[in-house]
Image (cartoon, rainbow, N blue to C red; front, top):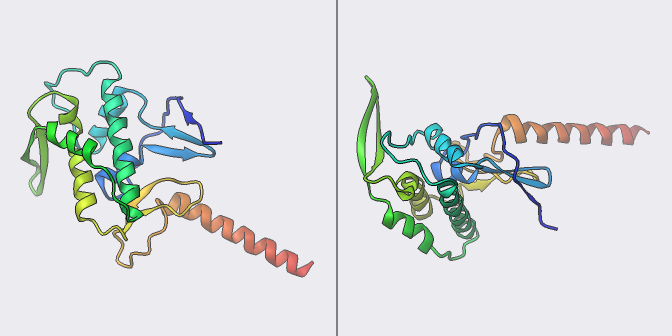
Length: 203
């Protein structure tokens, strides 16, 4: 039986642990036990995620039709996930849906100066449509798929975790989405197993 997808709204904030914008976007769908939990439940959730990712929507942008931005965001996320999984498996994917987002997303780079020594380049949409809002994610996904070393694009090794990350450690031996969550759980489980084995050997 396939795990169910929870429709319950979540109060936890998305975690930005992947080291890549496109992978962080994939990680808005997480696993809890046998269920998949979607952190994007409303249009406002999508806008909030874009804000947290450093991609605030234009102040003059029209509010999206109810759930339409959510629908487009989930559609884009599903397509990126399929392409990443196929690229990781060494198989060819169909980039047509991603390319459509890129084609319709009219945007241009702008230099943003936060503080005296903090400079970033942001993509600014030329129109208010969903594709303009989601354009930076589509562009990040295209860059990841075309240029990243996919030996370093990994899924967390925890059995119940589905989060992706880009391994940017010097040794390239990163195994967990988070050492404090999945990594710590693994250490605790390994310790308990060693303790059980030790006690069994003395019985």
